[in-house]
Length: 121
Image (cartoon, rainbow, N blue to C red; front, side, top):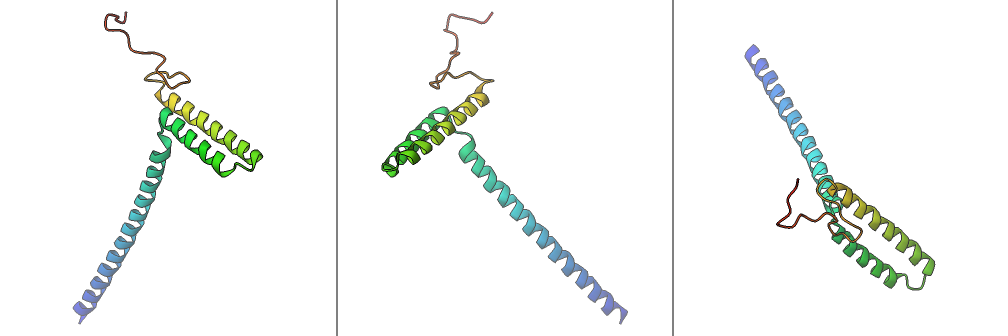
């Protein structure tokens, strides 16, 4: 009879461990999905090149002009915000790339590589 009791306790322990492990796996999957969503969001917005920022700025400014043609003050405010965003994003891009090369205000390389005959001293 005691073996039946021991078997019941063992079965109960196995069920508890399986349920606990399932809960941990579900929690880990949830955390992983959240991290992946956050990483995807950062990747989508964080790494825009200066050209990408310029294109997005132009698209946004056209949309603001078309949508708010009758409200000059709102259009001006939104235009200012978009232009400031653009400047910040381009500066962030240049700062990230500064260890490789420095871009001028037009997004061009201000330190082009040496000509084929030139060498570093």
